[in-house]
Length: 544
Image: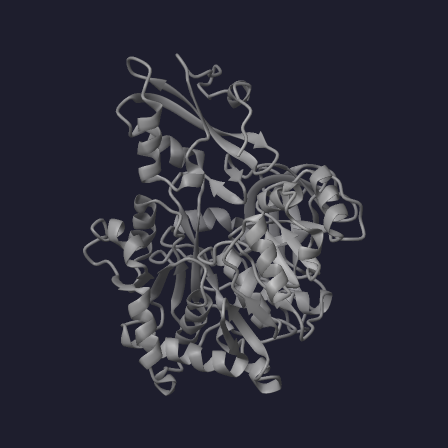
């Protein structure tokens, strides 16, 4: 734990975090205010409205809002949400394709002191049901098509469900003057990001307004904003990290946020050219596709000045070829939902290679610890952990997740010793450059999305014909990894098409194994652990 002593210096104490047994969250993580910008997301538009109210703040297809217009629209949305029963501390769930309603609704929830939750549209109905039953939102804004397969499975005290068209009607008729203005605690719960883990059941990492501000604020010094800056990502805005790294970070910088709707090469390039996008965040599969699509003209991306890539490793040769083709280097980063996003990045002045991940951002420190949580020296591998920076203008400012929603034991394990434990294996060199050498638990990183093997294994074993199963990742040039499974079945050869149908009904498409191998038995060692290295030798060539 860190505190500020009477001399104004940041010092370390030995105390553990205090966890609330009901919410599963830490009571408070001590921190300093940031050296720049607002203290809350609720106030993120204050300076732009004061300094340039007529600057374009948001673009979504043909719809555009200035900062003054956006401010009024956010108040309308807050007024409408209040009329729909949402108050401070209530969860509001959203399940929509990328659209302006998501960032506007997000900011409205922050002004109300409510807690925003994105429910990815790609999730299967049982996955959506788990997120909604676990978080117990007051309201769920979705399309009727997405909500229909889920509603019957929700707990009896489930959320009010409203179609997005009805929600928009409520917003359009709401009076912005009726929007409440509660006192906002920057360290109170503000949003939930569900993340897969070793248990196979997604856990809700809860974040405060304070720690959702820094991804935008940290760029003010490294990349000072220009009036012509336009920022957006084609990745799903129901993923909290993507919403923050796209439109919300643009607003934090006082620049224009653009809602992007297509991530395929043709669609993405058309949007970049049309909106003169300058900053974006992509996953490795999109870098691969842009590089290898012959129809893409390098001039299509000429306006881009910054491309961040995360979610999985991208081969150095691919990154070099991308830089040569498009005359811009895509910078790799490392992060996790609990941080809440990328916290280590490459620097543009070092050569591209496969050996390292990069350097910690200015507001935090990476520390490598052994199994007893003792700090290790340089070049010695151990668990990658994170803590606030101890020196400089950002000292003591960073805070990680508040913990896992209603899982106090998991929160204590994650934040034991008052540092954030990533579970990844890595080492720091003498210059502070991080190399990550091992995966957090056994998670498969498929095209930037986390896939929990145990979650997929559970669905496989729920099938009557499967008696044993193991799920693992196999290397893939485009996606980083793909999902593969090996199964043992009862009786004769199973109907794999029927088995895939079973998987698709219960899992998001990206979690369904690309390869399923039927074996007489799974290879296990003397301790009974499956030897996944032997199974990876079964991998077959794949192409999209």
